[in-house]
Length: 422
Ligand code: NIG
Ligand code: FE
Image 1 (cartoon, rainbow, N blue to C red):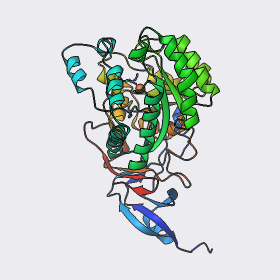
Image 2 (image 1 turned 45 degrees about the horizontal axis):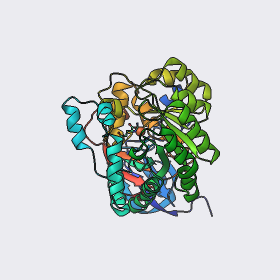
Image 3 (image 1 turned 60 degrees about the vertical axis):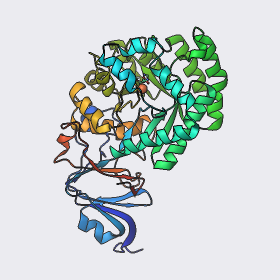
Image 4 (image 1 turned 60 degrees about the horizontal axis):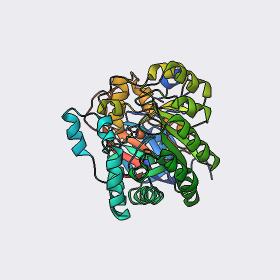
């Protein structure tokens, strides 16, 4: 075909003040200074086709090369990669607004959990819900996430805590993804809490997870990763190691909840076992930072909405982690107990306030770095030819405004896999 031929394409997005491609190595996120120059100026339009990005340029350049079936006017907004939320717990039914009221009355999250509330109340609700009811609940959560610019998310089970309940959760995640167009990276979180029927017998539940549930999830092909909540009131380090080693042996990637309330060495274990990430880290010590830095692989999952929601005084040592060269991502931790927000823009706001991230550091954290933590840096989290066409249009005067205003939603349009969702 001659060079000057005009090809059909699906969409031309035009009229952007800038297109932030995050194409200068931010995807690896191991060299922090490179994060500071990820935007390509002079781009105001993007051509999309076959669910992929075809080309970037000025509107007239792209119209000279492509005849679009559809156009989208960015209206002077900023075009950026759509958000990839790399830590969410969407597989729950109902909510915990009653417990949130108790917290206003002075009871703490850990106190409520110790009295059989917390994760275990969501377990009771999930077990009572039919698979269809759960699927609709998850679809509702995905729609709220999409409304805030999330095209793809890591989605954990973890409120079933039995083989049947966990399989039901993971099937509901897959069905809700098909219903909504949310792209999911499913994670099995059977090791989230000790279910009531195993109270006083943590090793019995661990045996069930290792001998029955993990293999069943693997066999069904319903999760790419396995996760464990390492915490005094959840799984200790010895049991977490046994569970993670078994998961790794079965071929799961590993993701870990570590050091949210107590420093038990969860991040060190994650680094040692080659986990994709260690998330939370509010109680991380310098040895944990060193272990993550030395691993050159394990991401720090920064979830700054959770300490806000829990009124925690300490935050993850984000600046020290970045300084030490630890790759990081920023995510919502969307769940009914400790972070009831589906909004990445809100997580970015808290990342900027509590973790002192710049706008571009936070944006990379919720796009290219998130993709790298999930092993898809070669096709997600950036706007570049050949990448999946996941884009947002942000109604902001400049990128520095990202996370500046809070409590309002800057996402004007979302395109996921080349489809305009709104
Ligand atoms: O990431 N840390 C464990 N899991 C969730 C909380 C789950 C809940 O309270 O329902 C979290 O904070
Ligand atoms: Fe979590």
